[in-house]
Picture (spheres, one colour):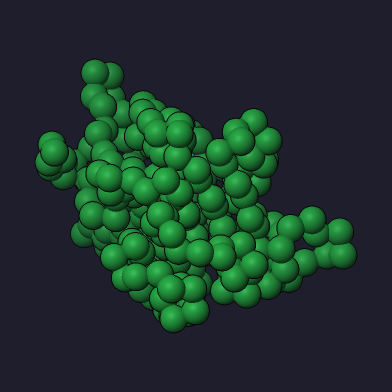
Length: 243
């Protein structure tokens, strides 16, 4: 296993796509002959200069590890110091990052079924990991359970729907708590939906990412309600960021 040592990079903004009123997808490119190597699930530190000093914040890489660019899913928080500045970036702007960091990675030995459960921007590292399984282990079955509040928070909707349509080994379950009458997917939080989707813990691992309350509730359900063991569940806990 090759250790990927964190390095500093000066990147260039290739895309700043507004996904909803408080979330963007930021694509960053690297200098010629420079490539950023990372394991799916890892994160980078993003730096912005504030009052003469560098402020840094962590963001998971949401893109494929095979891409030449990286994509970051960034939510703007009220009172944040760094995230509002990232919203204002335009094409060609430079951004200093450092990475990769983190141990939220795919296991070397994958079970027959790989389940990804995420909420909100917790989908970011799961998207990267999901693509690695589908591309490198096409015999594995992949399930994505993605929870969010409003229909406009269904990040990567078209992409995931297309993936589900074209790949018989990929199953998509979207769960929203505030929906219209025409919403075609699940209603409610992921913990309400999971028992209807997962009937047995046999031969599967779960990768779980999201806010602390969602993590705790889902973990309790998987272990106490469905019979998963702790070593079947790989977790990335997100604290309350001041970003």
